[in-house]
View 1: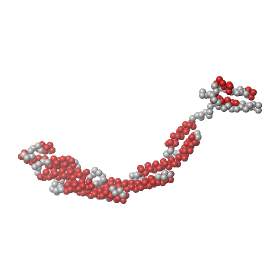
View 2: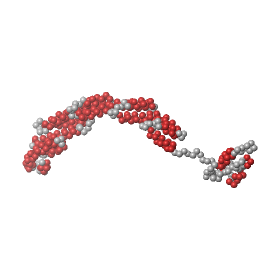
View 3: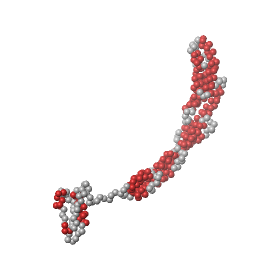
Length: 366
């Protein structure tokens, strides 16, 4: 039918041929309007508008057909206006104006129109929607004031919509949203007070802050924020409690008392704030315990590659002091560090007393 109408549009509308053709087209136009009615009932508004506009541009049609096409176009566009108010769950003045225009459009449909029953059904539905939106918009204006009392009133207004109202789901969504806003305002006071309590940073003040923050219940909007504060303050308290043990353990480790250090640090239990770093250090101390003991010293009679004549003098002195003495023996004076002496003149500077030394002194050359 649409193709036939398109071809008919090529005829000169001022010609006699058009006047004859338009009479032949009227049955097809009536069928096309029936199709428009079907699209309207199926909520295919754009298709219904396209059909109506295709018919409306045909000149010379019977007045009834032309008028019905215009009314189909009007009703379809009214539907689009009404549907646009469902795209946002927050009511606005724009939504009120759109529904008002849709209502005005269907109110112009006369009782003898084929669209009248449909128009009356939509009129009742849209008027109910308009009343709901007006009530919700008033509640929204109250909630925007941001005061606990005004937000509470807004939530109460939204909750009052009966279950059979067209905007009931929107009202429930708004009521839930505003209820959470009330909870958020109420719980924010708890968290602000908790932060003030925690400012001194002492264990006592932190414990009081935790008690205040824990007043925010699990299903509340600020529960996550409250729990984060509780966790932070709990870790600070744990550090205060465990720090003395940790400090003592580190002090013992610096003295080489690794086993005592480990036993002291073991007081810090799993889950505590310092536990991870403590365990890492304990593992290092355990490695220190497992290492073989280091030599207490090096034999003084063994010359090292860095030995010099000066370096053997303490060994000589020690040997001389160990010799037996008698009253006739001269006093042996320990050698004092002297300037570096050439090797070939050592004998000139070393004095022995054969009468008082039964055993000669041997200087190792190793």
